[in-house]
Image 1 (cartoon, rainbow, N blue to C red):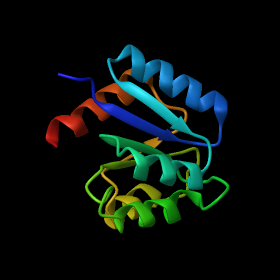
Image 2 (image 1 turned 180 degrees about the vertical axis):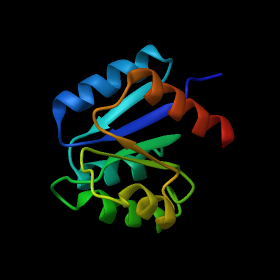
Image 3 (image 1 turned 90 degrees about the vertical axis):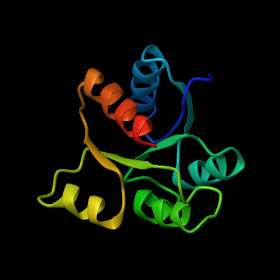
Image 4 (image 1 turned 180 degrees about the horizontal axis):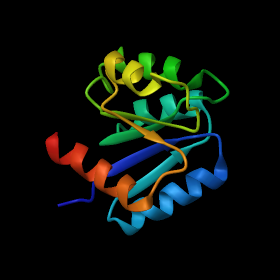
Length: 124
């Protein structure tokens, strides 16, 4: 069985490198996009098993990209996890209410990231 595929969409190249290394060590195949438009295009071309989506990025932003993903037949069933350094009160509840499957706060614990991604994919 092939390893689950995760698409990271984040404009912070250092964060992408860290998340990629952590997830690859956890047994996942990882690809990355560095802005919202590129992330949407990659997801449409070859839908991953899960998307880690930064909330604040150029070229569309995370929330706008998430809405586009939800309205596309190719990606509407791909679980999206919002990842952000933003820490406003109620943000996690807000994105979960809108339909994201999870919310991960930066900085994150590497073990928690892998466990969270694995848990979501196990429920699919």
